[in-house]
Length: 435
Length: 140
Image (cartoon, rainbow over all chains, first blue to last red; front, side, top):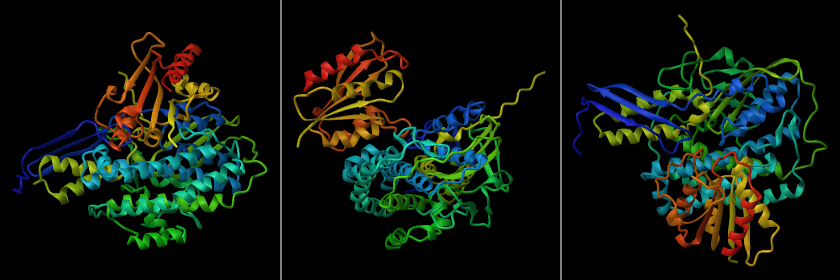
C-alpha cells in the first residue's frame, strides 16, 4: 500500500462513538504533519447529581446516587454509603464486608462480560460491529451473555434487582438472603466456573495490539484482598494514602471541549481500571487466579494498554472464584446491618468501580441531611490519560495512514478504557459574570 | 422440553411497568401450553431467553401516537432494522432481538405485543393488562 502524505490536511469527525457507555464524539485534525486537535468530546449535559443530593436525608443518598449509572450503580451506592458510615462511626461488620464484595463482583462481572463480549472483541477481531461478530462467533457471544446474566443474578441476590439495586443501606443490607437462595447461587457459580475460564482464555487469546505507554497506575490496595471496597489508595510511583487525603493529591479542572472534568494527580495524568488494579494488586489475587494468569502467559505489571482486556477477563474469573469462596461459607447473620446514630461530619471513601477507582466526599448536618456531596467517577479521572494515549498512539502509528484507519485506531484506544461518558459528566461549575 | 417464553419488559416506574404487570397477571392464570414467564429489567437479559425458547411472546409498553391502549402485534421483520449501537445504557428491545437473530433465532419465533401508553408517566390501566392477557391467551 502506498503511504499517504502525512502532511495532508486530516479532518476526522466521529459524531457519535459506538460501543461505549453514553454519548461522546471524536474530533481529530492534523495540519502539516502535526496533530492539531485530538479530543474525546464528551457532550452529555452535566447531570447535577451532587446538587440534587444537597438537603436530602442520608437514607435517600444510595438510591439517588445509584441513578448516576445504570451499569455501575453499586459503585455509587457503596462509595456513598461507606463515606457516610465513616461520619457515623460505623465499623464494617465482617458479614457485611463479605456480602459487599459479592454484590460488587456481580457488577464487575456483568459490566466486564458485556464490554469484552460486545464492545472490545469486535475491535480485536476486525468486525465493524457486534452483530457481524455474532454471526461468526455465536457460541462465544452467547457465553459472554450468560456470564453477564450471572453477574445480574449476583446483583439480585443481595440487591433485590439488577438495575439500581435496593438492598444496600447505611450499616449493611436491608435483607440477608436465605440459605436456599445462596445455595442456588453457589450451584450457578459452580456451573459457570469452566465457562468463565474459557471466556477469559478466549479474551486473552484475542489478537491484541501492542500499545506501550508510560502511565501511572492508581488503585485501591488492601492488606489481604484484591482491592475493591476497602484499603488505601496507592500508585506505582509511591502514592500510599488514606482515602481522606484524596483532595490533597488529586485536582479536577475543566476543559473547553468536554462536559467531564479532567483530574490530575500532582499535575500529571494517571490511569485507573482493571489493568491498573492488576499492575498494583496481582499478588493479592487468590492463588488459583494467579496460577490461571500464568497458565495463560500473562505477566503483570504491564504497560501495554491493550492488556486492559486481559485484566478485565481475569477479573471475571476472580469474581466467580472469590464469590464462590465467600458464599460456600455463608452463614445467616443475626441482623444484616449495624445500628448507628446520625451525626454531623465529613466522610471520604473510594471503591473500585468496574472502570476504576471512584471517590466520594459527603458533608452531613447533625440531622443526617446532606450539606455537600462530591462524586468523582473513574472516566473523568481517566480522561486526561486517555487523550495522552490517543496522541501517542497516533504519533506512533503515523499520519501516513488512511483517515479510516486512523479513525479506527482512535476508536479502539477509546473503547479500551471502557469509558462511561454518562457517569463522567458529574458537575459543571457555573460562573455568571454580570455587568 | 419445548416451551413458549412470555417475557414482559419493564421497570418499576409508571407505564414502563406494564410488561411486569402482565407477567404477574399471567402467573395467576392456567395456561394451555408449557410457558416460561419472565419479567425482564434489561433487554439484554432477553437475548439468551429468546435463543432457548421454541416460541416467544414479548410484551412491552410503547410510546406512540395513541390512542392509549392500542395493541400493536409485531413480527421480527416489523422491527426497525437499524444498526446496533450497543451502548449498554441504550440497549433496547430491538437491539436484543437483532442480536438474537444474528445468533440464530428464527424470525418466525417471535411475536411482540406492544401497547401504546402514549405517555411514559401514565398510570397502568387494568383494562390494558386484561387486553394483553387475552391476546397472549389467543396466541398460545
